[in-house]
Length: 132
Image (cartoon, rainbow, N blue to C red; front, side):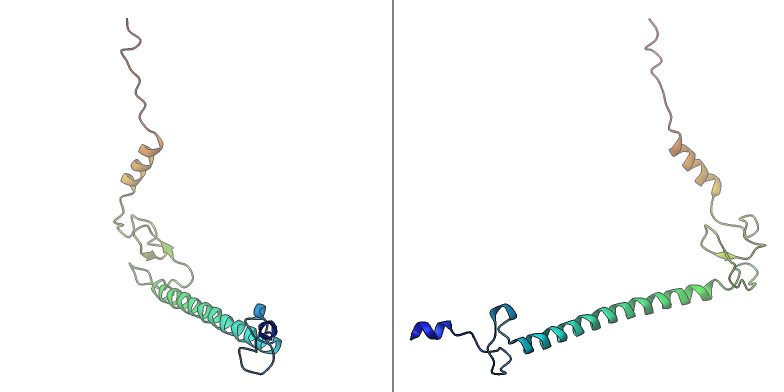
């Protein structure tokens, strides 16, 4: 008799009165399907909130830069869609886009020299080796 009670499947964990299966978290088939639906809804809501937050953040960040790009840093002229970014980090109109026109603080000569020095390393040979 004791072995017969051990062989009976457990009742549903949700308490509906049907027998549950171990593979389905001790729930009957109907309760298991409902539980899966609730989990999927919770996951989709979480993904939706994450996407909504990222889109909102990206819109906020692009909105602030769009307002900063609307005027030239020198003459305060409206730029519209056209704006020239300089290496100094400012935005200029067509007249002030060159470094000479807006007195740029970036040293282009030093930057060019550094690039050339990295691309062309010095090669020194031993001069005493060829002599007797």
